[in-house]
Length: 181
Image (cartoon, rainbow, N blue to C red; front, side, top):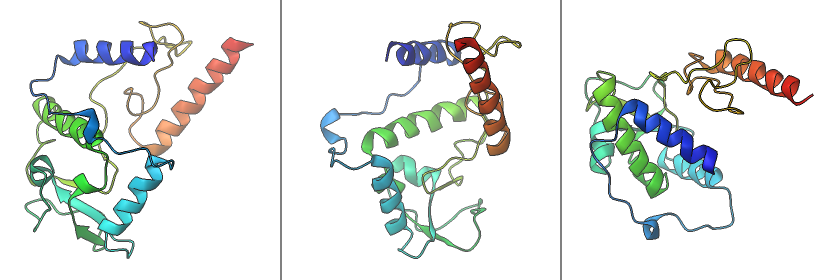
């Protein structure tokens, strides 16, 4: 947990402190029902899509306001015709929604258009690349700022999609194995 907290603190110092804090009370979080939260989110997303494998979508402005999207704006979903206008706030735990709202607002300040009111959120997945790069040693792939941390993939700024993220993850895993021998 200390490694995670240090990483978050380093990221906040690199990006700057958030301008807006979204209210969050732990009592409003999902109760632990003994099942994986990912399964619960998947099932909630399936129901939001009308139970017919349509992806639930929502305009960013509506997500930030916490209301169901009634119509699309300038941006249309890339998922094709199989989508349903929804309120994704009901498919995700409250703390996740609050974190996403804060992140969307902050990213909008750093990446023009990220928080466009008509931008579309689809299901429980985001489609963007990290504007941040966590520096790592080019030979060992280990973080230059924290021993034992191997920043890899899209979130760390070393990939631009699922395939390159997977390849980068494999390279980092190989370096971890090599170091442990």
